[in-house]
Image (cartoon, rainbow, N blue to C red):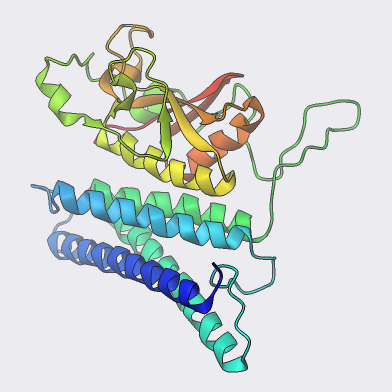
Length: 315
């Protein structure tokens, strides 16, 4: 399956996805800049993009970023990334392949960096979608750098039997990022949303096949969340699949309609989730927490030995 034809068609699909992601993102950037350049403080009056547009650009962006990270993971540090395991024989083919790969990476970097500058640094309130793309890209770019340079958590313990040290900043149990309360970081709960409330229409159902939902209630509640939380979990699911081939992100709790949490829990308005990997592996939780930070979750807490807790801001 590593024939030139297979590599060609795989490359064509990857380039099409990148073009769709880049053109859509730069289109969003142009609209935001045009809408905000004459305003002293840019406050969007109405949504600039439809839900379908947002879904496509965030989903395709996640796929492109996952592809970049997956290829950098299997590339030896110092070597140029290639098209899968395809190895061209002639000098011309080698040059052409390397050129395509370099241009692909540069286009991904330029798109993400532009979204970061415009959507996060210049006009953070103009479009939550563009802001999410920029902040998520930054986290994924860090993960891509980790993957390419072969940085991994160290399993060595300190002299004297102290706790293990981690080369990539993996979280330890009890640690939270940022080091502030969830309420300060993400804001207080809006209300306990019930299925009969008008606010329930603002929640979405996550059907991502890369995520396993525990759904112990058999009601689908663990799939219900805010669009912002869905976007972050979708991005995290792509990174988890690249980090541990064969593993998936697992959601054990999301929106809570059964009053199983503290009164002020963000689970009640769909802004919080409890996560593990599938298959369940407690040894991966520290790394999973770091990946959740890199994927753009606003608050990450390595709560206990059974799961991590993540939450997002409103909007």
